[in-house]
Length: 197
Image 1 (spheres, helix red, strand yellow):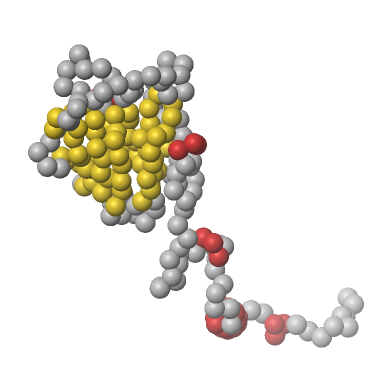
Image 2 (cartoon, rainbow, N blue to C red):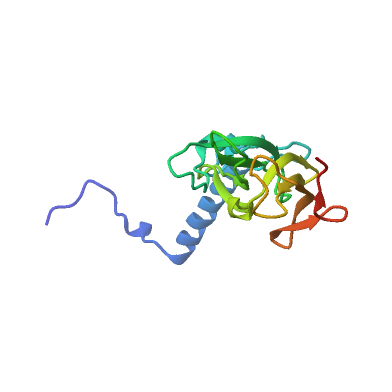
């Protein structure tokens, strides 16, 4: 039998105390590395994805653009047209919504209008989230305003089918406000009133 030139390694057998000492040393190294990490390091978020710091607000997303949405108008081949719009935060989520008045672009008369609420998100483009007034209601819109989450409009209508579509003879001042997960409509004043000729 040949003897080894290397000294006898019998004293290097591992025992449980050796494993405990190695584990304690590794834990100490990991803990020190964690303490020396830069203050603003994060696991996976880029600076634009982080929540805003206290006292700072995140950049608001732009209000939805009506030109990027197909409105639910049935115009029989005629183009639709947005006649009024207003933007603001309607539901208190910090993001702006757009309210639009749209109608078919008819050559004569006063075609009925629709009032639509548009919303968008970072992941999806703008979309119609509510119809406040449908063209089937046979009303047109005289004015539109949005202030403090309240939409106000003057609706123009007709007292009978015999009234020419060019000349609405009734008006109603209405408002919509987001309450309980939906838009609630109320009338201002005495409701529908006759217009003077």
